[in-house]
Length: 94
Ligand code: SF4
Ligand code: SF4
Picture (cartoon, rainbow, N blue to C red):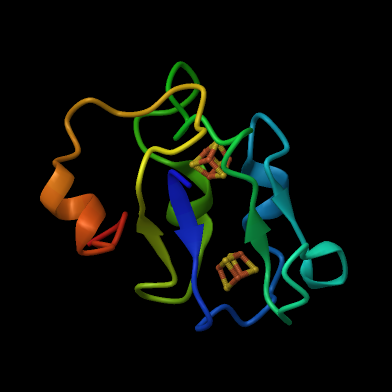
């Protein structure tokens, strides 16, 4: 993962069209069969080269819903995010 959507997601849909690489799917397509939106780690680029910060998190109305996560399979990631922030699943937008 690189950013991750947690179970506070209210399925509002505000994030999905903001993603420049179509890494987000809705609850119907969640591969983990959870009733929330989902970010594909192998597609998410943390908006590097597209926006100053992850656009999904900027658009999300639910505080703390989208957090940093381990880099994993992400093809690109933000170098200024610390391992501690990732380990602690820190909020993308404070
Ligand atoms: S951080 Fe950017 S690339 Fe990753 S899921 Fe959110 S909008 Fe898409
Ligand atoms: S914007 Fe936030 S609350 Fe709305 S669907 Fe996306 S992750 Fe869920």
